[in-house]
Image (cartoon, rainbow, N blue to C red; front, side, top):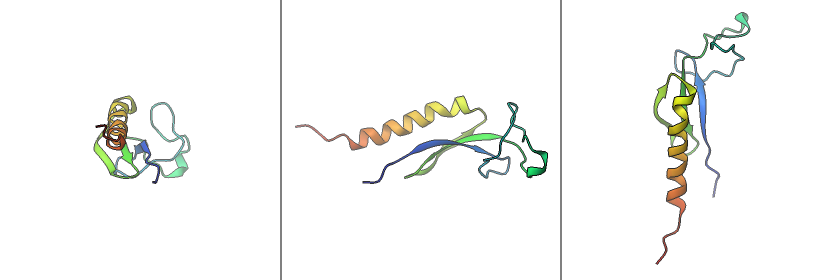
Length: 81
């Protein structure tokens, strides 16, 4: 069985993933990189894809990440008779 990962990814204002180095305010460290800065954070599951709506703070996305990860764990628990 494949491993399922649930991660939080930073998003540009247009919804694409941001992998650039940024300052604490979310603006790009290198102005020449073409990065528009980080706007939102989304929870992405390797099995299900995007989970819920993007949040404006990473800390607000963490509960959704944990809840979704726990839902996969609950689905894998064998039934006991």
